[in-house]
Length: 71
Image 1 (spheres, rainbow, N blue to C red):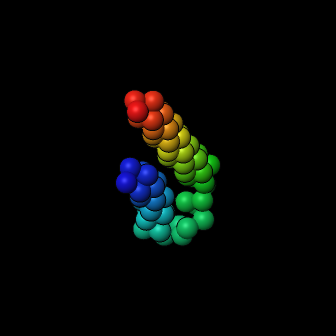
Image 2 (cartoon, rainbow, N blue to C red):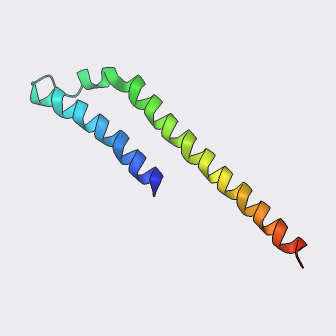
């Protein structure tokens, strides 16, 4: 759920830049100047998402090991 919100935020940043560019009559090409920023944002969100999944899997495995030792 958090990743969906983060990705929609990145899409919003791109959308606002595109909307401003089009509203001023420049078209979509000047909005492409922000492409490095858009890529960095997408990579950052993806990195955090993967990191969160790995932490959840690690804690899940840890909990499973403790429950099997209790028997």
